Image 1: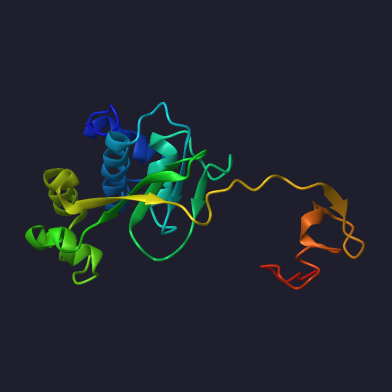
Image 2: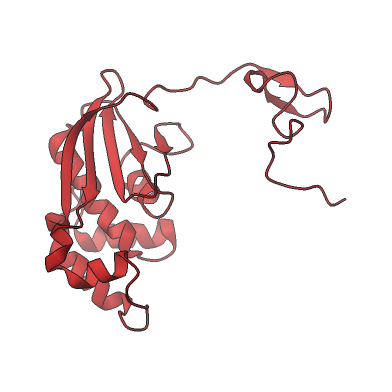
Length: 188
């Protein structure tokens, strides 16, 4: 079971939400389940994932924490880890994929470390290995957040004097795009 769902039910939800059953997302389901064994569902919990790949979707499928509501944050440390914490006390649990424990799960280790191609390790075999390993490849630690735990309140809205678009006034006198901190270049 993964957060009260059978593995089959969870994989069906994953396919609907993510587009396909990704190995990392399946592991993420076990990670959220491991955290929920330690933090009651009654706790108003927020979540932090340490990679932008797969784990955010596991959290969004299995908890009320989403990127959109601000209860899920991505702190991209490039690690396969999830922390869920009490939003009032900042105490929580961090679950991560433990490389030492992967020693007896070679398919998962080889996939995660990028040592084999998809051709040499078909997804069906990898998924089977993950379903067999379940939470045996995970470890956890109790933590207290020192950063990223506080929710950022929406700021007042202003109109940028340069581009005349609405933006959050907390960005400064002009919007971030007009400060050169945008992600795009206007072509027309």
